[in-house]
Image (cartoon, rainbow, N blue to C red; front, side, top):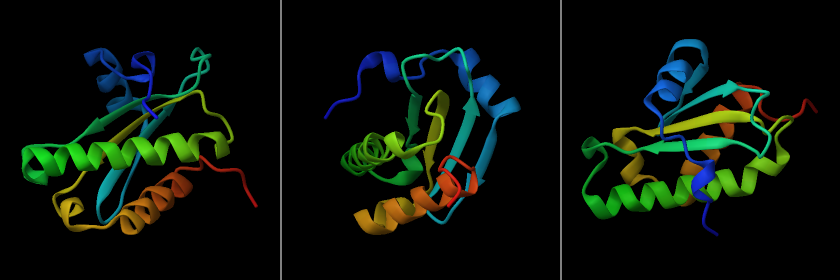
Length: 118
């Protein structure tokens, strides 16, 4: 499933605001940043950053596809989906499998308090 274009973070000001006032958690394979915004009424806005340090073009595209799948599958479980999410791939992410990346993404989302308390 493709995320609609309206779900993407494209403005430089939004990235700067997330970086300045949002919260981030780093894992083994990725960094997940988030900022809650009650003005968002149609769900989360997401961005995926995969630099050249993550590998060749096909490896970066693979990582972005996996991250999109994580967002698509996990956002319905969030306590409040009205937020910005930025996923930054780290250098070792290209060697990780699907399950390792998913576990790391879920762990960071849990540390950021995106899931309801058990």
